[in-house]
Image 1 (cartoon, rainbow over the protein chains, first blue to last red):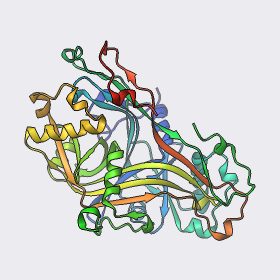
Image 2: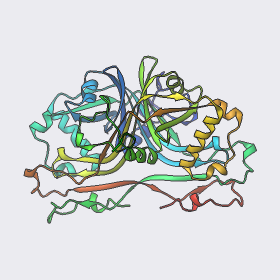
Image 3: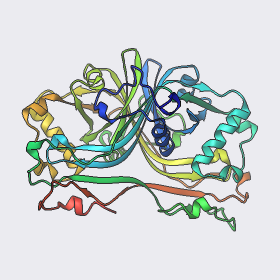
Image 4: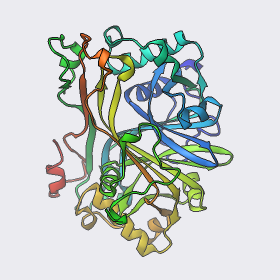
Length: 218
Length: 218
């Protein structure tokens, strides 16, 4: 595979615990980042290590976040603090016959690097349009776009996905040979993010209901 | 309310962005920690800030994790590194009439502190029993318990939940008055963690299926 389709581990992203779960496929990395709505960003500021949840989206090989100019995290990351970002999609509980062989099925991404703030309003608007496309495709043409005041008060930052560790666990329980005959139920209790019935605001009046709303619920 | 039912913010856990979402109810904190299976732990080691996903559970006012003695995170946290832990339960996408008023409904916890490793095997076993109870109530009496070798190879660490920030967003979209008449659908697209049909291992034979398996799927 050429470089654009794989993730080459660095010293920081070489997976040492359960290395057999490491995944070096860039498409898998992108799918996990796209499916997760929220990531957790670690950074140092004011002599402390912080870990803050925030919404994210992806364009190309960059992960984007946004926030108020005045937020501590936005200020620290805009100033170039080294960041580490983690997100996890939990797919199930794996019940083995022995207590210590229990595990979970999940897909996780951990990214190392430094964010860079977007400077031009046009770049910020284009990035925020991509965010809206992730939330609901086509909605960027419906919602009232951001005005100058709103855009100026908002920071948009991006970080390269070049230095990322991807881990995928998707398996049935794996017990030691001597435990396989135990009379204990083993298997997977699957979890998945479900879509429930949309809740309309009271201000909709006779507004047409978009397809991404009527098609939302599972 | 007395101290045991509330979370008193420190300088690190005072919520400055959207302070109206701060929640100081200790029962809410416990419910979020109990409902989330995975947290993200930020810590410094080897000159870098890391953020690693890991399973967690709660007993009383402590959050517990476990891992291999040899893992970088376990070693750094056991040595007393300052940690910050974040977990997020995502409840929905909030679609407003203006792009900048879009938001998400979520429940998040951020904890600051330092972990302490449990020393006695009996304490580690009792803590791991509580983890098993979270995964499937009663299963600790069914699965083969950990033996000495397994317990010795595993670290169990706990951290106090005393310094925690809880944020709960559960609302319909909030648009500016001048946007309310726009012909744009507004409302919430709810998300929830669903339970799908259990997948049995091939090694179950005639083993009875426990209630927590038959009752798992939504």
